[in-house]
Amino acid sequence: MSVSRRGFLQGLGMGRTAHASAFLAARGHEEYVAEAMQGRQGGRGMRPQLPPGVEAIRISSNENPLGPGKAAIDAILGKFPEANRYPFNSTPLDADLEILIAKLNNAKRESVVLGVGSQELLKNAARVFLSPTRHLVIPSPTYGDPAGFAQHQLKVTVKTAPVDPKTLKTDLGALLPLVKGAGLVYLCNPNNPTATVNSAKDVSDFIAEVRKTSPTTGILIDEAYCDYVTDKSFSTAFPVALATPNVVVTRTMSKAYGMAGVRIGYAVGQAETIRKMARYRMPYNVNTFGVAAAVASLKDPQHIKDEAVRNTAVREFTLKALADLGYTSTDSQANFIFTDIGKTMTAAAFRDGCAAKGVMVGRDFPPLEKTWARISIGTMEEMQKATDVFRSVLKPATTTSSGKGQ
Ligand SMILES: Cc1ncc(COP(=O)(O)O)c(C=O)c1O
Image (cartoon, rainbow, N blue to C red; front, top):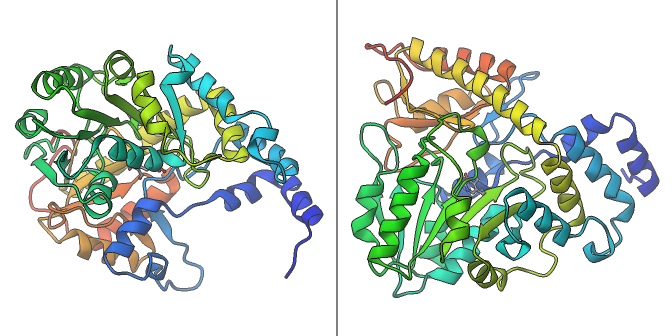
């Protein structure tokens, strides 16, 4: 069926939000890549065969189930008539977005670089700091993209330190002995998949220690999930990055901002550090729609506050449902939870059991996949249905727990 340009734009005009949400819905790169690496037909072959009328609940990729806010959707729709123009012939420009991000964070524009999602920035930081003689240091488990890129593309050694065995928090003390001579240390705060945070003080003390031990080592702090943190000891590492050479903080609009399909991320650091990363940026890497949506979203901070409150309520509901069954979760500070289901089954058995009933939970996270499962937070309605499925898949565990703090 062919759709004329006029008809398409008119279609968007009628029922704008519904059309645009469907248009923007994205699968989630992390899940897709992970499944492809596990040899499952590029991820898409994974969709379960469900009985007619049963919709899949996709809580596997840490996406915002509600999509972008109204301001972002309106901004995207408003840009369709300019889709024929190069981004430099449209407004806002990518420079306008960089200036806005800088202004909101008391920085200069030179301290900001945009990426096609934060993944481009993680890769570019790896390109800047790593080499075959300068290794990568990461906690284990953590977000897999930097280590995968370092090992497979850059042929760089990766040294890991396990997260704290009790709390599953990133063990900064255990990372320190690995940093001498490293090219880059990657911290994810809150950490994916464990959902835990390290306090602002612990992170800045750690950065100071790394700089003492290994002054030329870069430090990358990935704050993809920071908008969802409720722990008061956390705050952004932007001030440290702006004050310290070779320290970069990355952010994404794929999570709380609900724009995983729109692909906007940014990095903040000292001008010299950002300049090195920007050398790897593709021309016009961010597009007209993404820039317009990002500017509109950043001018609507209340939307993100409301999204965080919504997520916290649904997160508490989900943690309690699992705790009532006797399953312990970490202290989640993100839009996903990490739950110890090892008393009953492996993450793979849990995932397959849930998928058969239309609920898609997270992939394996070695080395914890025998005991821990990652569950993204959907809408309250989705999580009510999902927790019913969890009850039917998981047996009640023999001991009870609070659902927090382990
Ligand atoms: C910790 C972390 N960092 C970065 C990303 C990449 O996100 P994006 O490229 O969409 O900004 C993800 C995606 O799930 C993530 O979990």
